[in-house]
Amino acid sequence: MTARLFFVIGPAGSGKSTVSTLIARRIRATYLDKDSVATAFTEALLEAAGSDKNERDNNPYYQSVVMGLEYATLLRLAGDNLRLGNDVVLDAPFVRYFTEEDYLERAAAAHDWPTDVVITVVHVTVDGGLVRDRVDSRGYGRDAWKLAHWDEFWATAQAADCRWRGAHHVLFDNSASGADPAALEAALAAFV
Image 1 (cartoon, rainbow, N blue to C red):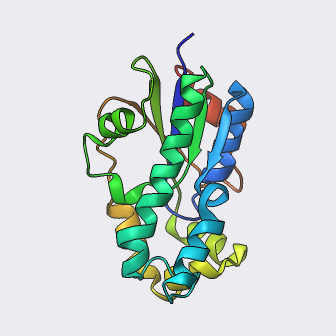
Image 2: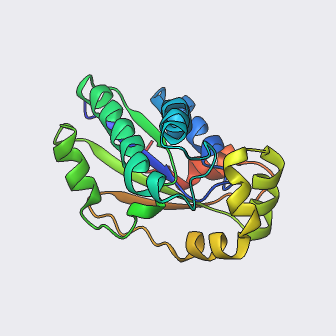
């Protein structure tokens, strides 16, 4: 049986985790959240480098060294599961990589994904005001820069257009008060 890989992408506060867990439950897939996978080592690396453990958006060390390790680890874990025949749902922004059209091809080669894996990218969108409220209410220290520089953060998040080839692309508007399982099911009908 061909394994399926879902990339659930979008800016902080868009509801990626809610959408990801709905998909993972629906298809009984391995669920990999970048924050769960990487936060402990990310914070340790930032502190070891003399940085604030919560500063990511405006931290050159995080941007040039640590972030790449986070994503490589996530993609490697995906490969481990895909080779076992497990469907996988990845929950992470991936925004920095959106413009790299061959990103999925390079990831597949680097992490030895099966050649027949079926990839679906679910881009979660939401109204900017709602995102700000969600980011503010979750109270994460790592969101301080986003909130203090909201216009800059949101302009970058909205300008990003995922150009990855080799995948099905699904746009899911998560502007409701919570992800609607029926609406998500309809959006993904051809892929789950």
